[in-house]
Amino acid sequence: VLIYDGVLSAQAVDRVGWYLQEKYALPTDFPNPAPVAGLSVESGGITSSVGVRAAPGEPVTLSWSVVGATSVSIDQGVLPATATLEGSTVVSPSTTTTYTLTAVGTTGTTLRSVTVHIGGAIEHPRLNEIVTSNSGGPRDEDGDSPDWIELWNPNPFAIDLGGYRLHDSANQW
Image 1: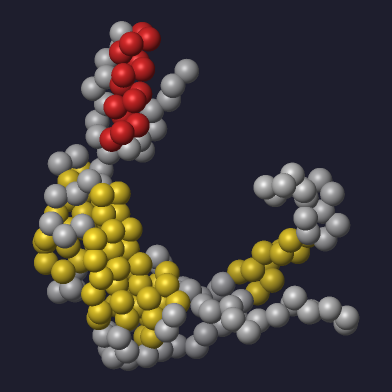
Image 2: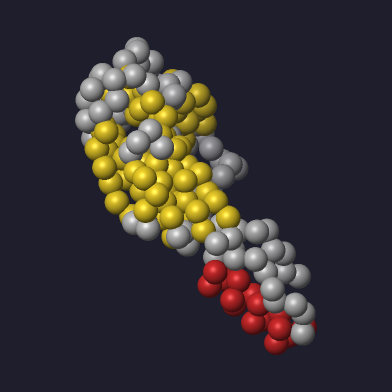
């Protein structure tokens, strides 16, 4: 049984269509997917597809990559509608600003947003979950069930974990 979930690439649509046509003589007029878009923001060596923290007026870099669009734009006066599907630009917001990329294709529109948060305190990451002596939990790529921890970032932006360490009375990781 084949299930179409609306997320196939154009190449996958062609392959599925050919298979259905050859095997079952079924219709193959699946819609092409909407454009695939990525938008990220970088500040101080931290890159995120959600958001970063910056000082007022600090330069931050917005980068985008889009497939399957005929037009791309970024609001806030950053990028007027263009056919340039990949690139980057520097912005220097003085207040917290959300930038939204709009990718328009013949089969739909895709939106991606990132936020540059100006100022505010940075909360430390928290240990959210700890699993020790993991004998029956999820397995890694080698088939082992290792111990693990889960960190939670309470901030609405990415943070740098450099300098953070885990330690007990005898060891540091």
